Image (cartoon, rainbow, N blue to C red; front, side, top):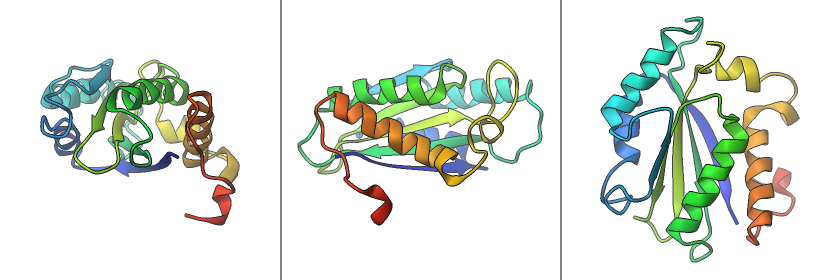
Length: 166
């Protein structure tokens, strides 16, 4: 059963990417996947910043960070990476750079994804594209629904009646 959460990064992007890229947590970097940016955390942040220079400049949010956590023993790190890439492809639609890292330092496998808040193609923010409307249309709900769909497709359990719990 996977759980998800998402939150904005306003000032510590390079530190956040460096944290999720930690060799001790990612099997010496083997469990890292990037899209549209370098695998080196400092360069990845610079790659994000380059795209932001083409953006509207109307947001104080640099990037977004989501975490997908699995029940202990439910997935291997390699399966989590495959699921994470699939989730990013569906959630970000190939429009946002991202840095994905699977962590194995806890009893449960989990992944972190930090993605640029600015769309690579039109310079508009993630909030403008994905976080409008009622609660059912907000990014956290979309992320949760996509995670559940992908987990079901991979034969994993999902939280039944998630609206009744945190």
